[in-house]
Image (cartoon, rainbow, N blue to C red; front, top):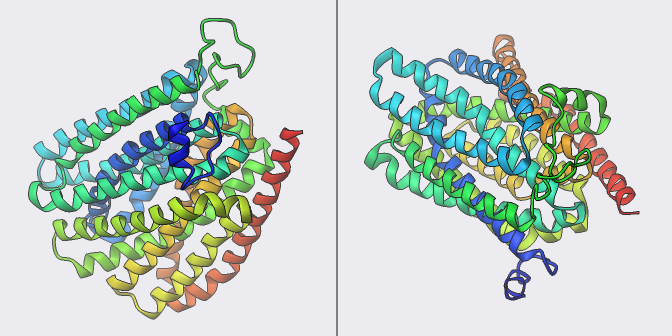
Amino acid sequence: MPERGALSRFVRVEPGEGAGLLWSALSFFFILGGYYVIRPLRDEMGASTGSGFALNWLFFGTLAGTLVVNPLFGALVARTPRRVFVPAVMHAFAASFVVFFGLLTLLDGPARLVAGRFFFVYASVFNLLVVSVFWGFLADLFRSEQAKRLFGFIGLGGTVGGIAGGTLTIVLARRIGPVPLLLVAAALFEAGVLCLHRLAGVYRVDAGAAEPAAEHGDGAPPGTGALSGLTLFAKSRYLLGIAGFLLLFTVGSTFLYLAQARIVRISFADAGARTAFFAKADLVVNVLTALTQLFFTGRILPAVGLGPALALLPVVTAAGFFALAASSTASVLFAVQVTRRAAEFALVKPAREALFTVVPREEKYTAKSFIDTFVYRSGDALGALADRLVAFLGLSPLGFAWLFLPVAAVWVANALALGAKQKRLAESQER
C-alpha cells in the first residue's frame, strides 16, 4: 500500500489503516484550523471585557451554557446515527460563525460589548463540544492499541491545522480586523465536514442503518436519552477518575488564563496587538507540538504507557506557577503557556482520548461529551472562584505556587491510576 510506505516513516501504521488515518488527520486539520482562527478573537474579547470580575462571570456563563447544551446533545445522539449527528454539530458551528460575524459587524457600543461577551461564552462551550465529538467518533473507530500508535499522528493533523489557522490570524488580524476572520473559520469547518464524510465512508459507519440493529449496532443511534451522559458518568468509577483528572487540569488552566488576561491587558494597548500576541503563542505551541507528534508521540505512548504521559501535565503546571511567581511578565507568561500547552497537545491529549477507547459506545459520545464540556467548564468556574478567593486572602503568587504542590501530587496519582485501569480494561477486551 503506497500510502502506508510513506506514513510508516513517521508512524507505526498497519495494513488497511492508511486511508482512515489520513482522512482522520485531514478532518482534524480543518476543524482545528477553524478553531485557531477564532481562538485569538475569543481571547481578545475576554481580555478586553473589562474588569477581572467581569471575566470571572464569563466562566460562570460558560458553565451555564454547558448545562443547556448537554441535554440537547444527548437528545440528538439518541435520535440520529453517527453519520448524521457528527457532521451536524460541525455544520451548526460553522453557521454560527456567520451569525456572529453579522452581529459584531452591525452592533456598536454596549450592544457590541454584550455580543462579544456572548461570543466568548458560546465559543468556549462549543469548541469543547466539537473537539469532544470528533475524538469520541475516533475512539469509536479505533481500538486501544491503535489509539496509542495513531492518535498522535491524527493530533498532528490538527496541530498543522492550528499552525495554518494561527498564521492566517497573524497575517489578517491587523489588515482586515479580527471579526471578518469568523467567515474564514466557517469555511474551514465546512471543509472538515467533507473529510468526515469520507472517513465515515472508509469505515462504513452506520452502513446497516436501514436494517433493524441490535443495541449499539452500526445502524443504531449510540445514545439512549437526553440525560444518558450524566447517568453513565455517575455510575462509572473510571469515568469519574477521568473527570477528576480533567477537573484539576481546568482549575489550573483557569488560574493561568486569568493571570494571562491581567498580564496581557497591562502589556499591550490595543486589540490588534493582543490578538497578534495570542496568535503568536498559538503558532509556537503548534510548531513544537507538531514536531513532537511527528517524531515521538506514536512511539512514546506505547513505550511508557498512558499513566506517565498524563502525569506530565501536573508537573509542568506546578513548574509554571513557580515561574510566574518569580516574574509576572509577558515573556515568562509566553514561555509558561507555550511549554504547558505543547506538552498537553503532544502527549497528554492523545493519552486522555485513548482512555475512552475501552468504554462502551454510548459512553464514548454522551458521557464523554458531559465530561469534556460540563466537567471542563465546572473546573473553569471553580478556578474563577478560587482566583477570587486568592485575591481576597491576599495570597502572593509564590504562596499560591506552594499551595498548589499537594494538588499536583494528587493529580499525578490520579493520572497513574487511570493509566493502569485503562491497561487492564484493554487487556480484558482483547482476551
